[in-house]
Image 1: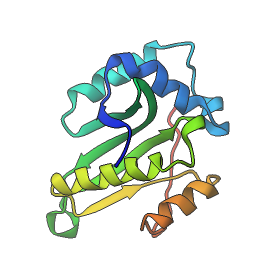
Image 2: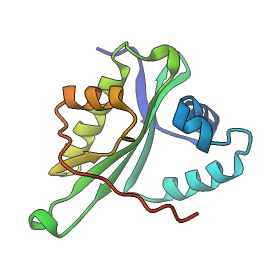
Image 3: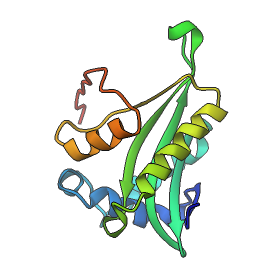
Length: 151
């Protein structure tokens, strides 16, 4: 039993989400919490797209975790629908208490409800602790990811 709720994010959650995104060595170099405009615009796009679920975990009225779940229909794997988990963050003072596990388990169950046959995620190569975490949850490091920075 958990002592937090998982719900769809609202615009009021943006500052807490951005703070969690910025609260690590990688995020500190790429996030700008003092400039909310790009985050609000992105939130509006996400909120309109029925394939996107930006959620927050809330305990005692405080946002303590977040992730984005994207459901993607496809032709490969005999027309399988898959989901992608992105932007997983747990507030620094909540880490190590099982919240991340429960948040990922929620995303897996939500993917099943959506008829997904596969759940995917990526993790920066430098995040070795995160890799161990995902492997403990049954994820396999089966692919090599590539990025092309456009801006």
